Length: 154
Image (cartoon, rainbow, N blue to C red; front, side, top):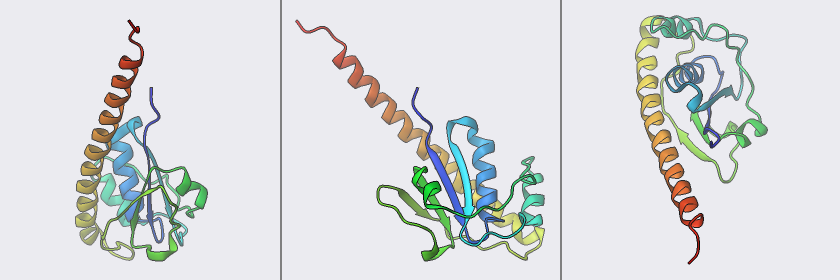
């Protein structure tokens, strides 16, 4: 069995966008994808409006705490998705980077956070489709090679 792909979500405070994205990916993909989140300047707690918005969909992110991004965390990730952290996020060669331009929910109420949450959900669903498709292609390629090499030579 192959190692599941690893995704790192990064925003400035690791309190809103990246936490919601990690919550959705964990909820929707289960153990098919390893999920991490961090921030370039994390704050003390996850945005209460983000927690509430996710709870409305049955996803509990209330136990999460904002974390600082590290080079090691980026190195351990296959895909790094940034959300407004600009040049403060470490960029390493060989990593796949995506920038999701999303409004920052910091300081906003639940009414303003819901559309941000819904946009994140749509992007995470598309990401899951893309990653599982890539994984299926990679597994098929590996199986094809092993079936070719395991045939007896005549």
